[in-house]
Amino acid sequence: MRRRRFQRGSVRLNKNKTVWLGEYAEYVLDANGAEKRIRHQIVLRPVRTEDKTIGKREAQRLLQPYVDRVNVALAAPVRERKSATFEAFAEIWERDYLSLSKPSTQSGAKSTLKRLKAAFGRKDMRAIDAGDIQRFIASSMAEGLDPKTIRNHWGMVSLIWNAALAQRYVDALLPKPKLPRKPKKMAKYYTLEMCADYCGVSG
Image (cartoon, rainbow, N blue to C red; front, side, top):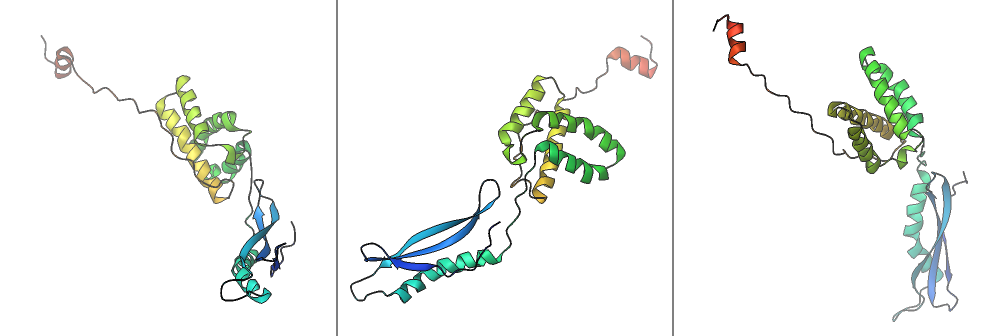
C-alpha cells in the first residue's frame, strides 16, 4: 500500500494564463479492494474578473475546501475489503455460526449447505446476485423439491449473507426471491360410514 500523505494541493495558470487551475490527489479503492492514488485537476476561476485580478494566494484559498475533504479522508483508516468464494465463506459460517446450533439443527443443515455449495461454490460472494438465487429456486422446483425444502434453502442463504455482511465479505444483503407457495393441506373429513364406525352405530 502506498504511503498516504497529508497534502496542500497546488495551483497554477493554464497555458493562456487566463484561468487558475487546482491540483490535488485522492486515495480510492479499485474493484479488487486495492488502494490507488488518483490526481485531480479542477478549474478554480478566471484570473481576471470585471472588478479585480485573482492572485495565487486567493486561488489557493479556493482550492482549500477540496484539499480539506481529502485530508479528512486520509486521517480515517482504510476499510478492508475482504473477498471469498461462496464455498470458502460457507466453511467459515459452518465453523463459527452453525457449530453453535443444536446437533439436530446442524445435521439437517449440512445437506442444505452441500446443495448450496454445489450451486454457488466457486463464485465470489459479491458476484452472486438476486438473479442467481432466483434461478436456483426455479431449478430446485423443476427438480421436484418440496416447497418447504426450497424455503429452508433460502433461509440458510439469508443467514449466510447476514454473517458475510457483518464480516464485510459482501456489501449488501440479497433481496428475497419469489418463493414457491406452501401446499394447502386438505381439510379432514369423515364419511357417514366412518362416523358410524367411530360412534359405534350400526347401519
